Length: 288
Image (cartoon, rainbow, N blue to C red):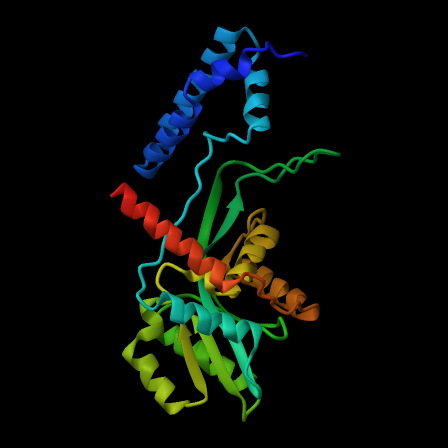
């Protein structure tokens, strides 16, 4: 199908870039749904004015790399020691110290044991099915430590995620790692990780060294990737009739991961990350 010669000029005249800017502003104030409705109306308006189909307008957007309907989430860290902490943690990932173990530690809390109200219907050659509603059978919390160099996971399910459970998990790590090795732990700024009793435990176990990620930068914690795989491959489509059933599924996934471990490899250039953050601050300053 040939597009009219004035198609793009009309689209441009309609204010594509102004619309994209408006979409960004609206989304930043939590009104992305209204922006999507407006974009749909504009799509139909352009198609009617030029005399082509809506799909043709969409193809023009695609050709010129325009995506005003999309919203991308972000959060810039306000940590004054962002650069120092970033380089420290990336250094542990890229060049781990000799005679030491680097662990990425976090907890995935409130994992729900959800059971569907009806079994999925068989669909040969088509996508799987599940009911939209479910029954809740309680929750569990997974404490996990990723050995960055080996790719192995130390994991333990517990009912809660207070400092008491975190200390019990630290004791599990202590028993698992051979004596004589320094243990560098990368973790976020969750209050449980900085509790007074946790600090007292650290004083009694000097081989543990904590490295906290910058605030609003949990993406630096390598174990988050493992949690994402667990959710996608085992939890999202699962049906669990009890907490015991849920914990058994998690433990099977832990075993499968440890049977075929994949070392964690950091590839991002910290200088590029720092430059991107600076650009983000500059943009925010212009807005405000």
